[in-house]
Length: 265
Image 1 (cartoon, rainbow, N blue to C red):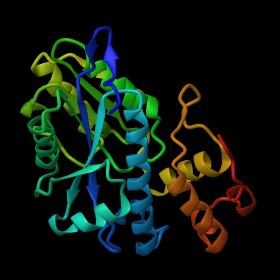
Image 2 (image 1 turned 60 degrees about the vertical axis):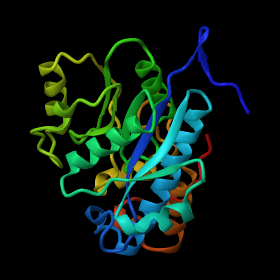
Image 3 (image 1 turned 135 degrees about the vertical axis):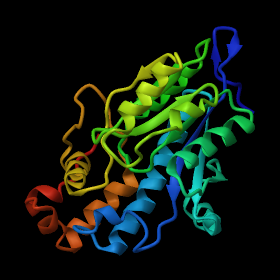
């Protein structure tokens, strides 16, 4: 058994990271990407995203005391996740009518499992830099109550990390709007909770974001010059296959000659 990662003479506190995950079902998954994708393609991207986000968490876990989870739904879909994910990613069901309740439930479950910090992470950012997950766990390992938020470029957030269950952070939030991150930061100020803000990243949930993803994975264009994107190999493989074998380049309104290049790094 490997020795626990340490900070000075003490083991690093345990950080659980739960991806808010939905099983890949054509017509019910990533429907905001249809069009330009078909329902089947959108579901395939969902699966690739889940696999790459899981791999990203496990990479971060090699550097910090991190455990990975899928906070999944629908309830009958556990077999789907077990089939596509490595065994080191555990499953916790979190399927409630209100998205804020799903997030709070996932946070609560992670604390109940014994973690000293709990993080909810979206499944829409397969290229999110691993360094941001490591930074999150590092900030939450510091003494004293605090939170970490990763704002999305669309006004939501891709990550929220806590050291205690603060229900106020999930109350009176206009979910699925551009006000989510701002309102969450306001709630943190209301309760006097110190908040560390990570660099913004993008969610892949509409046409322009798909173009950004293609540029990152197939053209080597960095979304943020000072951050190294996760390579997201499953998503990259799917993107290249669809660009080569379908009219996806036309649907994305990009030049085919540019789209099929494979860029390493």
